[in-house]
Image (cartoon, rainbow, N blue to C red; front, side, top):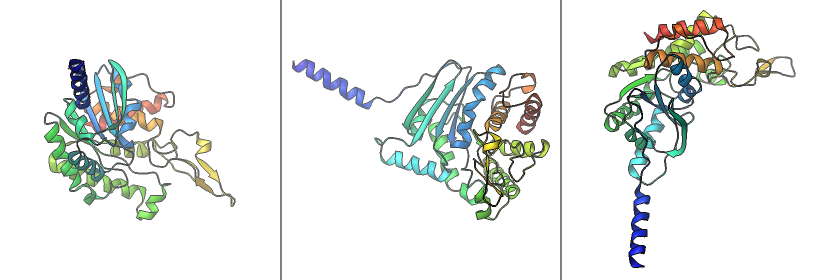
Length: 304
């Protein structure tokens, strides 16, 4: 009986200290971990399929907290360091073309970084701070140091986020226009990435190019074909009539919509996977053939 009890205690102790072990997977896969927020997790919508259509192997991980800034990511790193037993704050997704999608809650950034030999780790600023240069320091610098310490083999790449639509109320509060936000975030990302010599996934430039070349024409009650805003809503539900017959926005004004998520997948595939998009023929039903053609052109251009 004593031997059985000792064995049970030993097993319990072993299980209690076990950590999650993930398979390394096929070495032909490019292992990408995104440390981000809603502006990165949107990649999961179409990137795996785009990669497959381009004949590319993909292993994509996502550490997600909505609206998470560089400062908050680093606060999480500090908290994880101070309490090794505390649960994490992240939702973790992992998608590969060789197995089912993994979704786990309460993951820790430092654990996920060190658990897999990631080839690429992407970072970005929260969109509401992206246009403020001083918001990248010192937290972005500390996050870079954390990645280099725990995943020294990984290449750090910065995703440039995008500006809001003119309907977003925060622009008026900040006293900037959508165009001014775009120019300032482009400058801030360029300065941050340039200081380290990091490559940039120029998603902000892709959105700006789409707006210019479509061209997007905002109306009193229309997003004018933008790839931002009106997420998961029919056009007729995106705005509402007021009592004085004026219109007010009734939808998302800053996330990518389904078309935008497809554009993002193309941009990431062209940049990170060096995918040739010219041969793609399939696309989501919400995207027309002409729109898909323009998106492919823009994605290839901004990836250079």
